[in-house]
Length: 200
Image (cartoon, rainbow, N blue to C red; front, side, top):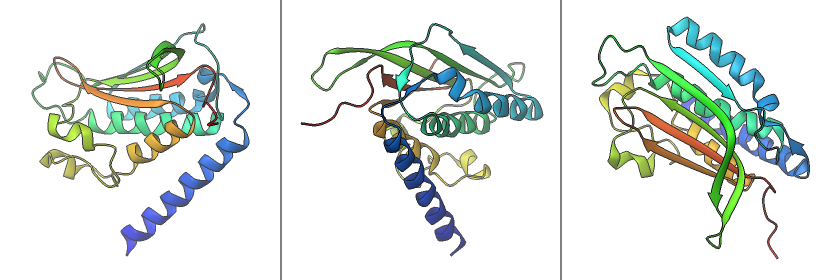
Protein backbone atom coordinates (compact mmCIF):
# COMPACT_ATOMS: atom_id res chain seq x y z
CA UNK A 1 0.00 0.00 0.00
CA UNK A 2 2.81 2.38 0.89
CA UNK A 3 4.44 1.76 -2.50
CA UNK A 4 1.16 2.47 -4.29
CA UNK A 5 0.73 5.74 -2.41
CA UNK A 6 4.29 6.74 -3.29
CA UNK A 7 3.68 6.04 -6.99
CA UNK A 8 0.48 8.09 -6.90
CA UNK A 9 2.33 11.04 -5.38
CA UNK A 10 5.02 10.82 -8.05
CA UNK A 11 2.37 10.70 -10.80
CA UNK A 12 0.69 13.79 -9.37
CA UNK A 13 4.04 15.58 -9.21
CA UNK A 14 4.79 14.62 -12.82
CA UNK A 15 1.41 15.88 -14.02
CA UNK A 16 1.86 19.17 -12.17
CA UNK A 17 5.32 19.75 -13.60
CA UNK A 18 4.25 18.98 -17.16
CA UNK A 19 1.22 21.26 -16.73
CA UNK A 20 3.45 24.12 -15.62
CA UNK A 21 5.68 23.49 -18.61
CA UNK A 22 2.77 23.81 -21.02
CA UNK A 23 1.81 27.07 -19.37
CA UNK A 24 5.23 28.53 -20.03
CA UNK A 25 5.98 26.81 -23.33
CA UNK A 26 6.89 30.07 -25.08
CA UNK A 27 9.55 31.27 -22.62
CA UNK A 28 13.26 31.24 -23.35
CA UNK A 29 15.22 29.39 -20.68
CA UNK A 30 18.87 29.67 -19.63
CA UNK A 31 19.70 26.10 -18.65
CA UNK A 32 22.71 26.94 -16.48
CA UNK A 33 20.60 29.35 -14.46
CA UNK A 34 17.65 26.96 -14.26
CA UNK A 35 19.68 24.05 -12.91
CA UNK A 36 21.92 26.07 -10.57
CA UNK A 37 20.07 24.82 -7.46
CA UNK A 38 20.39 21.23 -8.77
CA UNK A 39 24.14 21.68 -9.20
CA UNK A 40 24.49 23.08 -5.67
CA UNK A 41 22.52 20.17 -4.20
CA UNK A 42 24.59 17.70 -6.22
CA UNK A 43 27.82 19.20 -4.92
CA UNK A 44 26.63 18.81 -1.33
CA UNK A 45 25.58 15.18 -1.85
CA UNK A 46 28.84 14.35 -3.63
CA UNK A 47 30.92 15.86 -0.85
CA UNK A 48 29.01 13.89 1.78
CA UNK A 49 29.40 10.59 -0.14
CA UNK A 50 33.02 11.31 -1.13
CA UNK A 51 32.20 11.40 -4.84
CA UNK A 52 34.19 13.63 -7.18
CA UNK A 53 31.69 15.98 -8.83
CA UNK A 54 32.41 18.40 -11.65
CA UNK A 55 29.95 20.76 -13.37
CA UNK A 56 30.95 22.30 -16.71
CA UNK A 57 28.49 25.01 -17.70
CA UNK A 58 29.33 26.53 -21.08
CA UNK A 59 28.37 30.24 -21.03
CA UNK A 60 27.86 30.00 -24.79
CA UNK A 61 25.25 27.24 -24.54
CA UNK A 62 22.07 28.28 -26.38
CA UNK A 63 18.89 29.14 -24.56
CA UNK A 64 15.90 26.95 -25.33
CA UNK A 65 12.13 27.27 -25.09
CA UNK A 66 11.30 25.39 -21.90
CA UNK A 67 9.93 25.85 -18.42
CA UNK A 68 12.93 26.19 -16.05
CA UNK A 69 11.14 24.13 -13.39
CA UNK A 70 10.52 21.24 -15.77
CA UNK A 71 14.13 21.31 -16.96
CA UNK A 72 15.39 21.46 -13.39
CA UNK A 73 13.22 18.49 -12.41
CA UNK A 74 14.49 16.41 -15.33
CA UNK A 75 18.17 17.15 -14.65
CA UNK A 76 17.71 16.59 -10.92
CA UNK A 77 16.38 13.08 -11.52
CA UNK A 78 19.31 12.17 -13.76
CA UNK A 79 21.93 13.64 -11.44
CA UNK A 80 20.39 12.00 -8.36
CA UNK A 81 20.58 8.64 -10.12
CA UNK A 82 24.22 9.15 -11.10
CA UNK A 83 25.25 10.13 -7.58
CA UNK A 84 23.52 7.06 -6.13
CA UNK A 85 24.57 4.39 -8.58
CA UNK A 86 28.14 5.56 -9.12
CA UNK A 87 28.79 4.02 -5.70
CA UNK A 88 28.32 0.59 -7.31
CA UNK A 89 31.93 0.21 -8.38
CA UNK A 90 31.76 -2.98 -10.44
CA UNK A 91 35.20 -3.80 -11.77
CA UNK A 92 36.69 -0.39 -11.07
CA UNK A 93 40.05 -0.23 -9.34
CA UNK A 94 39.72 0.63 -5.64
CA UNK A 95 42.15 3.47 -6.32
CA UNK A 96 39.68 5.13 -8.70
CA UNK A 97 37.40 7.54 -6.88
CA UNK A 98 33.68 7.54 -7.82
CA UNK A 99 33.12 10.49 -10.14
CA UNK A 100 30.18 12.27 -11.77
CA UNK A 101 30.39 15.04 -14.35
CA UNK A 102 27.54 17.29 -15.50
CA UNK A 103 28.04 19.26 -18.71
CA UNK A 104 25.81 21.91 -20.30
CA UNK A 105 26.77 22.90 -23.86
CA UNK A 106 25.65 23.40 -27.43
CA UNK A 107 24.63 20.16 -29.08
CA UNK A 108 23.10 18.62 -32.15
CA UNK A 109 20.21 16.23 -32.56
CA UNK A 110 18.12 14.61 -35.27
CA UNK A 111 14.73 16.00 -36.21
CA UNK A 112 11.59 13.94 -36.88
CA UNK A 113 12.36 13.94 -40.62
CA UNK A 114 16.02 13.06 -40.18
CA UNK A 115 17.35 16.60 -40.45
CA UNK A 116 19.97 18.06 -38.13
CA UNK A 117 18.78 20.14 -35.19
CA UNK A 118 20.88 22.59 -33.21
CA UNK A 119 20.14 23.02 -29.56
CA UNK A 120 21.22 22.33 -26.02
CA UNK A 121 22.63 19.18 -24.55
CA UNK A 122 22.97 18.34 -20.89
CA UNK A 123 25.17 15.34 -20.23
CA UNK A 124 25.57 13.51 -16.93
CA UNK A 125 28.34 10.92 -16.96
CA UNK A 126 29.65 8.70 -14.17
CA UNK A 127 32.32 6.06 -13.75
CA UNK A 128 30.16 3.54 -11.91
CA UNK A 129 29.27 0.04 -13.06
CA UNK A 130 26.97 1.23 -15.83
CA UNK A 131 23.84 -0.60 -16.96
CA UNK A 132 23.70 -4.16 -18.23
CA UNK A 133 23.34 -4.06 -22.05
CA UNK A 134 20.10 -6.04 -21.89
CA UNK A 135 18.66 -3.46 -19.48
CA UNK A 136 19.47 -0.28 -21.43
CA UNK A 137 16.28 -0.36 -23.49
CA UNK A 138 14.21 -0.96 -20.37
CA UNK A 139 15.81 1.49 -17.96
CA UNK A 140 13.20 4.22 -18.60
CA UNK A 141 10.32 1.79 -18.08
CA UNK A 142 8.11 2.60 -15.11
CA UNK A 143 9.33 0.78 -12.01
CA UNK A 144 12.34 -0.86 -13.69
CA UNK A 145 15.65 -0.46 -11.84
CA UNK A 146 17.81 -3.05 -13.54
CA UNK A 147 18.38 -6.67 -12.64
CA UNK A 148 21.77 -6.34 -10.95
CA UNK A 149 21.81 -7.62 -7.33
CA UNK A 150 23.74 -4.50 -6.26
CA UNK A 151 20.87 -2.25 -7.35
CA UNK A 152 18.53 -3.83 -4.81
CA UNK A 153 20.75 -2.55 -2.00
CA UNK A 154 20.16 1.09 -3.04
CA UNK A 155 16.90 2.80 -2.18
CA UNK A 156 14.81 3.81 -5.18
CA UNK A 157 11.45 3.47 -6.89
CA UNK A 158 12.45 3.00 -10.53
CA UNK A 159 10.43 6.08 -11.48
CA UNK A 160 13.10 8.78 -11.87
CA UNK A 161 14.18 8.12 -15.45
CA UNK A 162 10.64 7.17 -16.44
CA UNK A 163 9.45 10.60 -15.32
CA UNK A 164 12.46 12.33 -16.86
CA UNK A 165 11.79 10.70 -20.23
CA UNK A 166 8.23 12.07 -20.19
CA UNK A 167 9.36 15.54 -19.12
CA UNK A 168 12.04 15.76 -21.79
CA UNK A 169 9.66 14.61 -24.52
CA UNK A 170 7.09 17.15 -23.29
CA UNK A 171 9.72 19.83 -24.01
CA UNK A 172 10.30 18.41 -27.51
CA UNK A 173 13.62 16.82 -26.59
CA UNK A 174 15.20 13.38 -26.37
CA UNK A 175 16.76 11.32 -23.59
CA UNK A 176 19.62 8.98 -24.49
CA UNK A 177 21.56 6.53 -22.34
CA UNK A 178 24.73 4.64 -23.19
CA UNK A 179 27.49 2.79 -21.39
CA UNK A 180 30.97 4.27 -21.66
CA UNK A 181 34.43 2.71 -21.51
CA UNK A 182 36.11 1.54 -19.39
CA UNK A 183 32.95 1.62 -17.31
CA UNK A 184 30.16 4.02 -16.44
CA UNK A 185 26.96 5.48 -17.84
CA UNK A 186 26.33 8.60 -19.93
CA UNK A 187 22.86 10.17 -19.94
CA UNK A 188 22.19 12.89 -22.51
CA UNK A 189 19.26 15.29 -22.60
CA UNK A 190 18.91 17.13 -25.90
CA UNK A 191 16.54 20.04 -26.41
CA UNK A 192 16.15 21.74 -29.82
CA UNK A 193 16.72 25.48 -29.74
CA UNK A 194 13.25 26.24 -31.06
CA UNK A 195 11.46 24.05 -28.54
CA UNK A 196 8.72 21.54 -29.27
CA UNK A 197 7.22 21.78 -32.73
CA UNK A 198 3.47 22.14 -32.80
CA UNK A 199 1.61 19.51 -34.79
CA UNK A 200 -0.45 20.73 -37.72
